[in-house]
Image 1 (cartoon, rainbow, N blue to C red):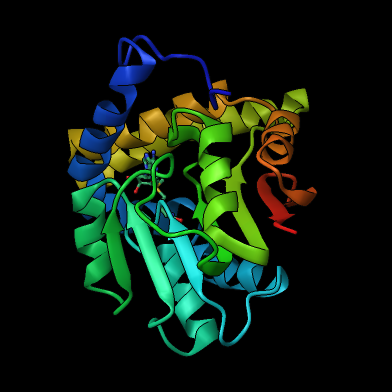
Image 2 (spheres, rainbow, N blue to C red; image 1 turned 120 degrees about the vertical axis):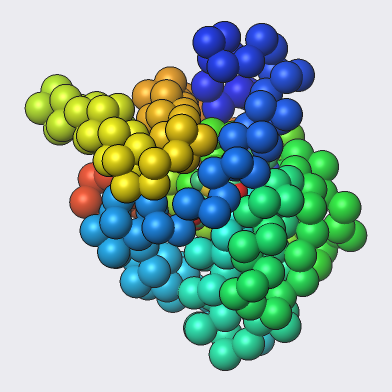
Length: 242
Ligand SMILES: C[S@@+](CC[C@H](N)C(=O)[O-])C[C@H]1O[C@@H](n2cnc3c(N)ncnc32)[C@H](O)[C@@H]1O
């Protein structure tokens, strides 16, 4: 199941998507943290730590942060665990990984969620922050998550979801579709950074509904599949490998 239809204005086919996405994040990497920081009113670090605590990350857990980007989720996990030595960060973008490596002494792997060069049954907790839309196939990625988690292990997927109502849907469209990319260009003076944030919006707009994400988790073999939301905007998908 694709997370969204092919965005032909951006790339020609599903096969071409990974290369396009990789280039986008490689080019935008140096601006990513600043953009996310002010774009989400400086709430990002607190929220990323709080959500992992709330969903049960605990001392001693072995963590895999898929699509780690610049390490924003993993840095907060390390604060909870008191160390980064049991954290593995995975991302296909060399540019994003280079930034993450400056922040924490975790294990880093350059790879995609769909094909992870990791053994079976390794992790207690698997996170994926704001990257669901970038994989080529949800079920393939989720099967990989199921494979690398230990029995009893938990997956936590964070995503921004377009509100269903017309009024909040309109505000969401104006902010993420217009204001956020425009402010990004203004503050960074970077065309690459603006394109990264325009694509961010385009994929949110085209993303499959939450029910499809839940179905894909079930199809991958997960149990206790749930979604809860913060402010009706931030989706937290959780599931357990029995
Ligand atoms: C919006 S950033 C999210 C970074 C970070 N997790 C956060 O919370 O801010 C999306 C990340 O997904 C990564 N990504 C893109 N395609 C991916 C794939 N197929 N598998 C894993 N990660 C992917 C990108 O390289 C990028 O670093």
